[in-house]
Image (tube, rainbow, N blue to C red):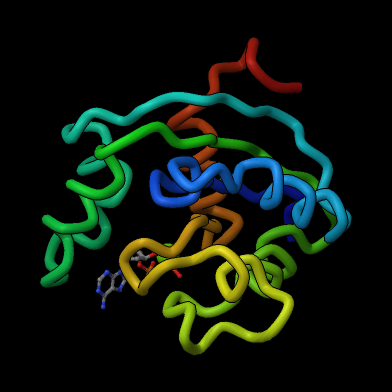
Amino acid sequence: MSNRTFTMIKPDAVGSNYIGGILDKINAGGFKIIAMKYTQLSKEQAGKFYEVHSARPFYGELVDFMSSGPIVAAILEKDNAVADFRTLIGATNPAEAAEGTIRKQFAKSIGENAVHGSDSDENAKIEGDFFFSMTERF
Ligand code: DAT
Ligand code: MG
């Protein structure tokens, strides 16, 4: 079990000025920020990041949304990081997200749901490597 996960604050949340509020909840949840950047994905980059979902009906909408505005990408550290961060962000659909979760508080809809969280140790590594070079983290 790895102690790192990867997150993005998505364009809906950045556009609503929720970066500070979301980072507060991340820190309050016991996660340490190992690397962080503010950037915007091209359509091609968003398509590659979400390639695993390319057969799903919402893929086009997802890629358009994720490249529609700036995002904050970060690598986070905590014991049991992947599972604990999925608990902190809540269900994909904010209507089903538990009280106190980031998506419950900040997400607009199932598509525009404020944050990404890796779903496995393997993907946390792949996703962190997608955004950060060796000199951008330690
Ligand atoms: P999660 O982000 O909770 O890991 P996922 O990996 O199943 O969810 O899907 C990736 C993203 O795709 C999700 O954060 C928002 C979007 N998405 C998922 N299901 C959707 C749906 N039914 N309609 C629109 N967008 C959806
Ligand atoms: Mg996922």
